[in-house]
Length: 245
Image 1 (cartoon, rainbow, N blue to C red):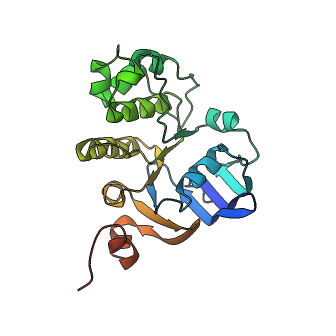
Image 2 (tube, rainbow, N blue to C red; image 1 turned 90 degrees about the vertical axis):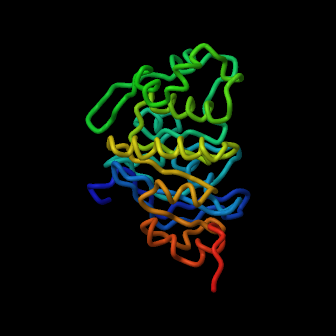
C-alpha cells in the first residue's frame, strides 16, 4: 500500500448465490481526495461501498484485501470498521424519522479524535449545513429529502470518519440541492477528509470529484482524472448525453 493512501482495495470480489456482483482489482484513495464511482443501476456501485464497510442486506461471499491506512480490516466486523473511521452514509440516509434533528445529531456515537481524524461537533454541523440549525427541533420525518441527506452526512461526520463513503446522495433531490450537497464534499475534502462518492448522476459527480471510476457489471472499465475521463465516449455518450458528430 502506498503510504500516501488512506484506503486501498485489492482483488475485491463479492458474489451472491454464486453470481459475481463485483470484481475489483484495485482502488485507492488519498486524504483530501474525492473519488467518484459511477455506473448504471446494477453496475455494482452499492455492492462496492457495502463491501468496504462489511455490510449487506443479503449474505454475500466477499474476498480480497481492504486496508485503512496500515491496518487490514477486511476480516473485521462492520462495527469495528466504523469505529476506526470507515463511515458509510447509505441510500437510506442514516436518519431516525421519530427523532428531532438535534436528537439525531446527539445520538451519533462519539469517538476519540486522533491525528488525521476530525470529529465534528453538532455546532460545526450546523455551520456546515445552516438549514439543519433552522430545523433543529423538527423530526426526521418532517424533513425534505435534501435536509435528510444533510442530516445523514452530519451524523456521519460526528463519527470522525477517516474515509467517508456516500451511496447515491443525489437521489430524489432537486438540482439546486444536489449541487449544494455535493459542493459540501469539496469543502470536507479541503480539510483532508477522503471521500468515496457513489453516484448515478455522472454530470453532478464530475463537477466535484478528482478521479472518476466507471463500473459496468461489477468491473472497472474506465478510471482516471475527472476532466480526462469525461472526454471518453463511454462517459460522454452514455452518461452525459453527448452525441458524436
